[in-house]
Image (cartoon, rainbow over all chains, first blue to last red; front, side):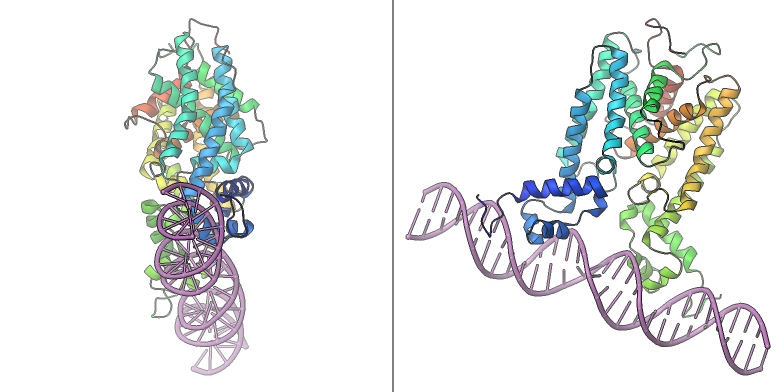
Length: 203
Length: 203
DNA sequence: TGGTTAAAGTTAACGCCGTTAACATTGCAT
DNA sequence: ATGCAATGTTAACGGCGTTAACTTTAACCA
């Protein structure tokens, strides 16, 4: 389909791109299909040829986000187990700090309910998988405890996700100490928080 | 001011209560000032005598949420450092699971930007304070490492917040294993994730 | 006690929004 | 060449947050 005065020719892609920059700059609350259509020189209902509704458009943006997050995580060096795990944590938090609005859309839960957009769920799982593989790797190399993989993975994911969320929402008091903070926190999960002299470590 | 046909008499409080149950049952996206006024038998602009705008109403609901969260955390037994810390984690995640929609409002970040509602920020800090006190206590008793308090606190807060968020949004695969999962994860942060035989623990 | 003032309601209106129905134009394949 | 499917259009519905202008009531004070 070529571009004419009538047929736009590339609406789906261009709407996606424009919406993505709007979300990144102003958050998903700033997305309006009518305004989007206006900026694209097109009538609002035209967008419905390409997106079922506003939520589906946002879901596509979130999918993009999960894909780039996954790429960032895949780029972490996996030579050494410890630095791989810390590297994953740093990359994860760094992504959230670079794209806070996109990150909030991806993990908002309010705007994009789980189960409603299968491709979105799948994209989220794919990103999660990178972290799980890294943990599994660390276990196989004998670096991590032989605890259930799901437990270790959930702990790592929870930690970096929570830190990301608290950071971008300004809940953590004090100045911007990233990425030192992320590294220190990740190390805590690895090494533990208790004073060794106190008790037997729970194995 | 008494209740007459004209003057409602208790609008502020009743609007708050109704809105709170709507948020709890259907999420903050379901809050509409017009619909709220309709259900209260009042015109929509009447609500503006009591709330500056929709966002201010939501901020009040979030404040309620932080106050009850704080109460739940304060109820945790503080006798033993270890069980106090794990107890805080369990109570925190339990609250998020009981009130997922309220929790999302409190920590959404999208709907209620930090800094716009001072009383909200203050309520969040007050809840955070309970966790920080528990950590500080554990340090003073020599149970926790002598790492910077802000680091230990941020780690604990991140972990429970991340786990809560991932749990209520259905990101963690597998069946509902709570609260075992929360206890196991909290213990991991205390004891560490690495196999002891591998390396010196980073002190 | 009576009159003023401020609080707390009212209706009407503006300009957005998402979404649908009904219709028009265009590209592509037979 | 023609017919169909894809991709646009305009018009309209109902809802929303919010503001302006006005009205009723309560409270207070001379």
